[in-house]
Length: 437
Ligand code: ASP
Image (cartoon, rainbow, N blue to C red):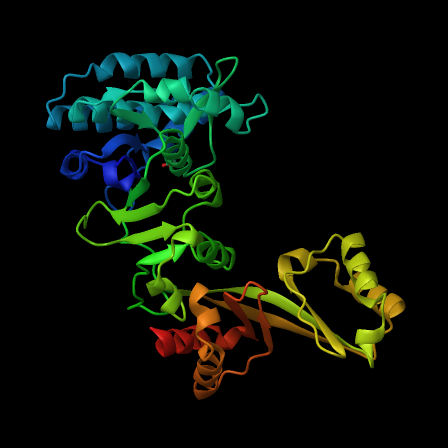
């Protein structure tokens, strides 16, 4: 068994957090590759090291002094080093970083140093090798991640039996440091898990897994124990805040499960994200896995007698959307109707033209426009085997006196989408949750 483990910024924000991380890593000998973020906030209002580094570089670019910012960075790292009695000459590293910023380095280089220094400290603390991400994570000159060049560097990783690797950055062929987008240490972790052929990618954060729905709506929402990659994709698309898609694709492709765990509550089971093919009978027997939703949609419903026999109708409608640069989120249709569900952001300034084109080219009998619509996705691979899901869902909505303005089911049969008036959104989510939790 081999595990790649990634610890986020709050998991490594202070010496006490480092102690928790060490205990976690040492509890399981399979945890051989450890990817780290830069120290995050220790308390609300605290600074994130990455933010301070960006600020130093930006101040320098404006010819302004950055000493105050830099001292905060130095204090954090020296504080952790001293509290843990580590034999790391962090001062020399800090001097080097300071002079590179002074000399006008790039934002990417400056920002990457938080992970770099944290990696140095944690590798000394764990007694693991330090492997600089620049040794194997490659970027193209245009700043995009270079998957092929990185895969070719697999040997640089496998040379190490156990290593701590700074997250968030890599380098171009020419040697310039480049970073992923914010939160990108998750991506480094996923790439490391894939290149090392890990059996599991553990992502240690400060939450005990993903909740079945938004806790701002349902404060006692339960943790999802297991979710499949496709379910997660549906839920995150509809607004659930989960791992970034970029951090999921390397492991999804390699069919490696991700285990989301809490550094501050290591005994909690967390959430396991598994390839669909690894879902067990338990997941298939579960009618619903999660509920997510978003506000801000407009639904345009066209009716036309005998629409299903009008061969070119959909073709013309799609052409109008394409010409106006609008993509419809969904297009549920009936014998004489078709609805376009469009994200309001995509419609800004385009509604009049769209309406005009539809009237001229599609000549519908009626057009109804409903704005302020929220979409709610109820997701679960078990839906297929649980025929009563839809009935239960709609009776929950009717008991809560919520009127469903739109109903759509994905062809993969794992997602029922309901459109409701925005003012009914919370009530609807809560009603569905209570019916299935
Ligand atoms: N430290 C970086 C950030 O704050 C990357 C990460 O934490 O994943 O965005």
